[in-house]
Length: 423
Ligand SMILES: Cc1ncc(COP(=O)(O)O)c(C=O)c1O
Image 1: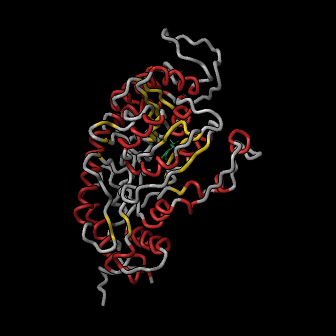
Image 2: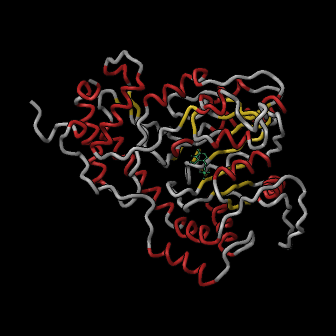
Image 3: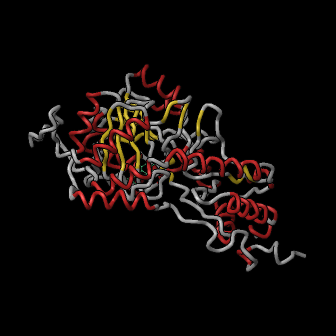
């Protein structure tokens, strides 16, 4: 007989994590408000060379360890700028991961290039360098790895492939602020890096992002796309001539000021999240049917999401795991655990299965001119990940051990009564 304390919240029992205990993200402090007010008092609200934007670019470049930075109004914009700057032209192929947020692939389509997907490593959920090697063709121009959920992709073999085939490497760092690989911060490992400062990220700015690079030529190319096709002059003056296609991807002063203020706390935030993640690792390890997230020793995981995985074979489940995982997720949510988005198998999205780009089948029919078909089923590891992962939020400050202990209780309750959860 179950005591009331043990009964599942999803079946009407008490929650493992009391209502209201998990604080939302982002945290907005007095210094953040003062930063925005300073902008309003100054009265300068916009402009590529405006003081807050300029300072954010300098500070983010320094934080990543890159020479150049362009602040943008989204991570998607930064990714598109990076694809363009890499010299990717219509009909060229860019290899990326099937498991990510849509923009990792649509940023390639934005420049009329063709996303080619390479399946993931089942333990890290990041693109598998071996699969990348198999997808390289004479039309490949770049590789676009994503550091998913806050863990760096395995960059050494990717960089080696790129060097051998003279390809550019564009890092999608949108979920991985301050993540490291062999001691170096992501974004500074490849030729170009793109970050998002969307409000739910570890570095929240409301909306926003940034491109980084060490290469002056790539910076100039990215700058063209950033602002109306113009090039940047050393004296800061604008010529107002469009040297090529450009968009308007600048950010605003208030956003830049807010992001700068949050940036002063990024290292503390990262340490806090990591301590919570390691607490969960210690306490969830050993629960049958659950695998805590991998953190290879050469990488600093920043846990944008804490992503344990349901291991159906450990509990003798011989049905397809997707519906079972969904029931587990719902049961955990009912206990008060905050869940994040699992992301998507992008080549299974209608945009790709029906090749709905710009109309008339473009860019596939216009600029590519060779048959290509997409479907999620070609990426079994990505599909398995989507069907088994449990992405968790709420490790952000000020949530500490009290919340994490509640999360552990929730996992123990749900996995302790898996038969009832899955019934
Ligand atoms: C992996 C990844 N790439 C790109 C983006 C796009 O960033 P933004 O929403 O700032 O355009 C996101 C945002 O969630 C992301 O998670």
